[in-house]
Image (tube, one colour):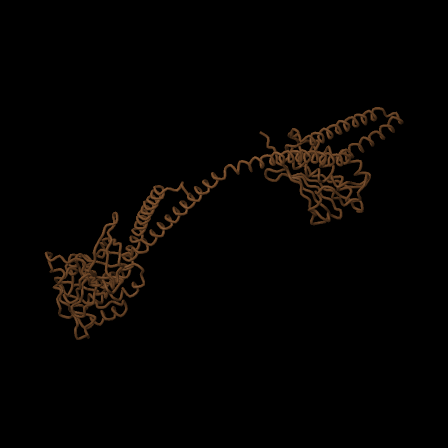
Length: 577
């Protein structure tokens, strides 16, 4: 394709190379920083481990320096003292423990039975002895000329009950015994003294190798600590710089990584530097992997761009054919759009007819109770007039007028529902609405011998709802409860209103047979009664459920534990300001 030009490919290739190099460099730098943090942790762990292993021997030297058995018999009973020191060696696991007089001559030693024992040797010039003479704990490390073992020495001035020094007690520790468990460490860790000598390490091949070989420095300290036959040269290596880090490069056949990141920290307690050699290969591998992922991503992006360019060229070549096809397609789309619009209008009309059908089916149910009340009041009014009780008849006419107004409000609510209008919600006392509903249902309660027990609060419980619609819900639930008691001899209904946190809770319970399917009672046209003009259409609970929902509340049906059905309405309370 002529859109793809060689300069574009070259420029993109250069961009990919630069990005890959940048990703590799940044990733390697981040990995090196992570390795530095890991190295500090490794150094701390190794130093803490070694100091923890040596701590018991340090304390042993302090303990023996004031032990009454040792201080009492050290100078006078040498054999008894040596036997005591031997017991301490067996208990503590030290290599050797010996006692020196104030001149540094060994007068008792735990290895007194061995041919190469230390008795009569003088160590007065050794640094740990000199430091102990000044009242401090002397710490020293060296290689024994007798058996070439590496040892730590802890020396303390022995005082006992006296104020002046009797001599010195030294605890000698074999370092090789401490290193036994170190070899499982993943990273190489070595402890290097001030002469550049690796005195201890978790790789045996590094031990007693000297990192520095400056001919101008004094050899006195080295010869004092290390016999010439024990010292070896360090492995050949070269160094490079990677940012702020030094990379050491070793040949094959060494116990060290071929490319090692080296970190060092001085440990004052040991008078040595802990040095860790971390393998650079994993960091390089991670950096290469991230660089390869970046290259693959750029290659994928380039492939997508190339594909898009080729597709655009192909679309441009077929533009004339597509324009004709698009014209035909637009005509078909316009035709289908017109059909869809007509179908949508038909669906809207069908939805309106369905809603009107549901409302017309529910009107008779919604108006049944107020009409029945009007009929009762009218019949009673006629009888009262016949008996010349005009005042009472006038009261019945007033009640009839109230019920007609109530019917008007119900029809207004139903008309508003049909128009999808939202009627204003008022602050009403739920207990007062229940009392009003009871007045309307009282004649039926008496005629059917139903006992209604009300438990209403003394103080108002205010909710936000429509008084007429909420009263219709209560009347419907009361009427259903009365219907459910038709076959019962003892007929009772309990109504309670309580407060639960932020809710007002209305419950109505009867002692009837209960509900066969509580989960279905709110479905339209579901009824357990005989369907007909005198019974029901199965819409009352469905309408009540919708009314309560419009108030932001819930209506739940269930069977009571003691028998009968129980309906619960929860509405949000309105707190008084």
